[in-house]
Length: 115
Length: 116
Image 1 (cartoon, each protein chain N blue to C red):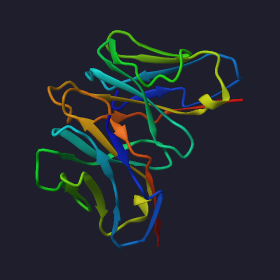
Image 2: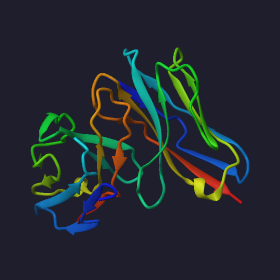
Image 3: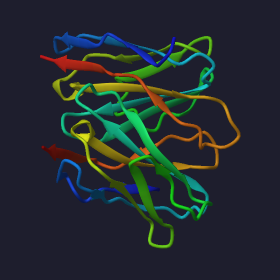
């Protein structure tokens, strides 16, 4: 069975600085997708960024980028130029590419952003 | 609708009562998921629908939990004889059809259930 591990329960960053959130996963599959979701206090899960395992190039979305290390099964999220609105819970998630399978989530990292 | 809609937003119920939580997915989305999020915890998978069938019910914690989906659209999660440990946010999500699973899964805002 696949598992996702987020070892940082909480992180903090100063506004305009850069922060990296860690995620590792375990799978025997070679084809899958990885996601980072953001959950603000409103509870709405919002997709931040996704990565296809068959792509070597790291995904980027504006201030958000990932460092995908397939051999190490590592998928970290880097937030550049942090903003107060980035404060939220961040969840890393895995999804098999075999079919429309469920997302498997990590336990989350709470990010605080200080002015 | 524009997004995944869930109702009620908040529900307080007495221990032992039954509750129904409703999810209206994005139009055209064939896959529908229910997750549970306890306070300060990650998301726990409950059940997955493809159309009206549920190929994966592996996450339902007990036989007090059941879910159905009709017309390939609206889904209802039912919890019978609620217990205090059932208190959590119940999140529904949907995703469009596709041969591969890279399609984005869209979440609703959840139903916050409190059992007293």
